[in-house]
Length: 148
Image 1 (spheres, rainbow, N blue to C red):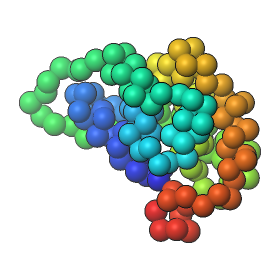
Image 2: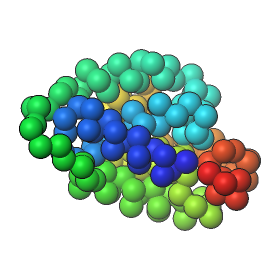
Image 3: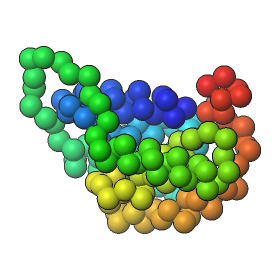
């Protein structure tokens, strides 16, 4: 499922005419995959996913239209999000980096995405981490053993 988040984030960056995948694109991708662990965790915390998407769209804006279509790569901030997601995965003794770890990485990175989650919606990393621990081993479509 994390690969799907990254593929969808690339599509988000492309749609907004940006040449790099930003953390906001990753958050938009999570919101756009309602059955992933991260989206389920947000709903469990009573976060309105439609509101999150509206906030992202309002914050991002469109880049200039380009004649040449670029394949957006990861920004430095998005790379740090993934590094932090890997740290969270190891800390929770997970066998793979799940979308819940990406969400935790987003919360730890100074970005528009973390501002929306933490300051606008009150989502805290410790709460997400606690819920993610409770869901450890719960099979979902994002479990690699289940063919995702």
